[in-house]
Length: 197
Ligand SMILES: NC(=O)CC[C@H](N)C(=O)O
Image (cartoon, rainbow, N blue to C red; front, side, top):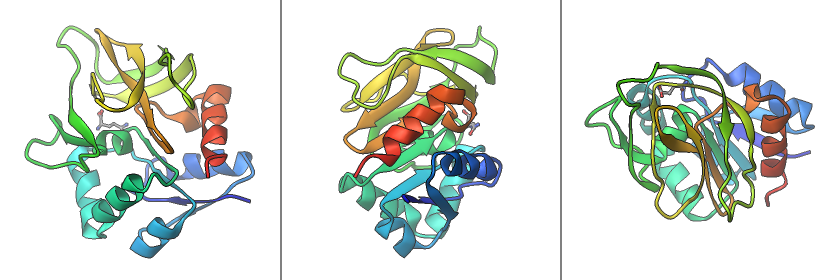
């Protein structure tokens, strides 16, 4: 049974990600202990909240350093929603707060002429060389997004223009959408994540 350590940047969607992993036969547990996060075979960085507050919680527990070390070692790690955004260098949501910076560039506002937050289902188009990401419909709940992720293979969706719906590099995945709320499509992605070693 694959153990997944879930790093709580906030608490809002912990129960739903735990349930999603349990449905897939995995054994999720929440931890902010650096040793746990470093040693775990699989780690999820979830989150429903503001970039700045989420990043502050990681720094408070020294998990910014641990997550950068883990990602540099290409250990299976999935970051969703604000967790996905924390992988970038910064976000317009929290000016002056550095992110983990494992993806060059920033997370920005949607164009002024589209409804935000983007709440609901949207079509995700995987890249030509995607290994873990596939086409399908996913559930989003976000007011900010990245439009590129240099060095990563991206999947895109459109909301006032194309944006990074998800990205992958080796054993590390970032999802702007919520796989735990995206039905069979999301469950299939989490299942592929659990198979990474
Ligand atoms: N649901 C979330 O985690 C939202 C992330 C971020 N605060 C945004 O609005 O884009």
